Image (cartoon, rainbow, N blue to C red):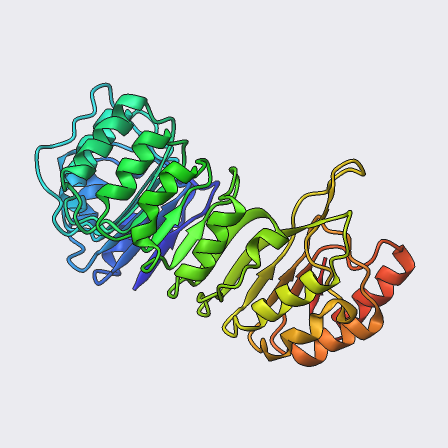
Length: 384
């Protein structure tokens, strides 16, 4: 059972008796998941004593709350498999991480936790030796990151396979992290650039990658992205940046046929004809038969930049190659210049029966756009 406590403006004195967290917890002794969001005033010794009595509790999510991390709080954590601390404030002048292990902890998220410095966070991480998933965000000091990396290389977390750091990692440390992880299935590098010298340490993990998210930073080069798409048979989610279209299309086939989400902006040379390249890309995408979300949006370039953004999503450019993609739920082409016609929209509606929304401008002319958007909305498809 999952209990979510999220009345943003309520305090204890304002709550009805049946809404008091103590009563809610007492009435649900078999709770497995407990989420506490934006509540105030409940999180001292008596509260953690009540939570500690939940024998089945495996997941605790604390978001934008103030807590007093007493001994009972850490006892609660000792029995958890999943702990998410998001925007949490630790109250107290001298926060102490107890010298104990947290053997059941599998998934840990520490995001912008106040009054718990990074070195103490590293100490806590050390005590979660069976950790499999780590999301770690905040102002990370180089010393803390260096010690974390050294611990990882020395085998502190042999089961860690999902890593989501919300800060930039220097290339030498990133290479050591890749080399120190025995297996990587999920990798989120939204603040860190992968250079060719670092990419070689990621290569041994390409066969096991399921999720690769590289938005928000300089993405991998065209050569790296081509290698990823040709070497990751288990990849289900790929989020990257802008890629020069011709660089990605070489003779090697894309083996990532399990992809459900792809976010790549293909860039085309304005000085040459791109008709064949468009159709070839559509043919490659047509092999991704499990695809649910197709995102080809990019950024708006000025007239002096020698590339045009992303795919031309029209039948005359090869859109018809995607008729076998029967699971598409979202088509995203934000920040691209599209010139849809009625025949293109009707084709999309007829062939992609699971489509729920389109994101982007379907036509620069307002009158044409209104007509096309109305066609989508008639079928219950959200068009933005």
